[in-house]
Amino acid sequence: MKNILNAQWIKSSKAALNREVVFSREFKTEKEIVSATLEATALGVYVARINGERVGDFILAPGWTSYRYRLQVDTYDVTSMIKDKNVITLGVAPGWKAFSYFGKHYGDCSLGFNEVAGLCALTIVYADGETEIITSGGDWKCEKGKYVYSNLYNGYIYDPAYKDIMPSQAQIFEKDKKILLDRQGEKVVEHERLTPIEIIKTPKGETVLDFGQNLTGYPEITVNFIEVFLSSLLGGILGVLFLIPFRKYFVSDKHGEYPFPEATASTQVLVSGEKGGSQAKPLLMAG
Image 1 (cartoon, rainbow, N blue to C red):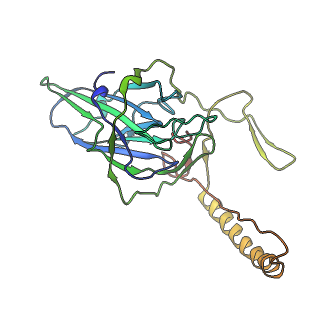
Image 2 (cartoon, rainbow, N blue to C red):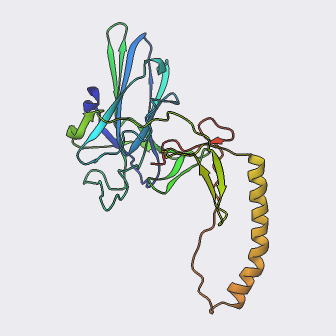
Image 3 (cartoon, rainbow, N blue to C red):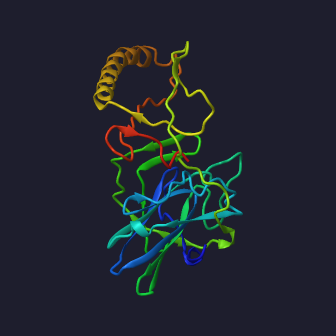
């Protein structure tokens, strides 16, 4: 941990609750590079990218922590990722920070309970001996990310087509950096893929994937767009056909006799993962 101590904490300048916030900055390099190192952390969980390519393999970085007292900093060698024209992004989601964890709220006067923040420093050493340091600050752009909903326990909603049409400048704020320390704990990574040994149908009609062992991870699925479209279309038609007579009976004929609580019925289909096409999987923002 070195130049990140000179970086500024940044947060969104507009409300972005329960979702991903993406900070970004463009920069150019015009000389031969010897090395490039990225130091990063977040009040939340983060994924750093350079030119669209993910930095490192840490899932839910910087990991669980008591944000008020300690925050680990990760250091990455990104030399091979630097080009002539570059964009560095830091996507931050709530994770354990902006989440009520058994009644514990991690907020203070400079950063609200529901807000997330990032901190990073990119150090580039050139062949002529010059060193360039790019740190998070008020010159970074901020926008809402494609993870339009993110909750540690409730999961996430990823919209590959979403684009924030009103990006803004990141807002800097003061926060003591004494809580920062170099990585000490083990990182969480994807290290293998397992196939279910059995698919079980319960008496209630539920589907259970039996992997034959205890594990921690998330599903990766492949869907057929045509099948999803046809099933959604059929469901919509049936819904309308059933809705009209039932609505007339219960809402019109029986109005005042039965209570009608508000309810939401929706279907959310994820069909685009990092590889695009028909593959989909949770990545960062399950936290």
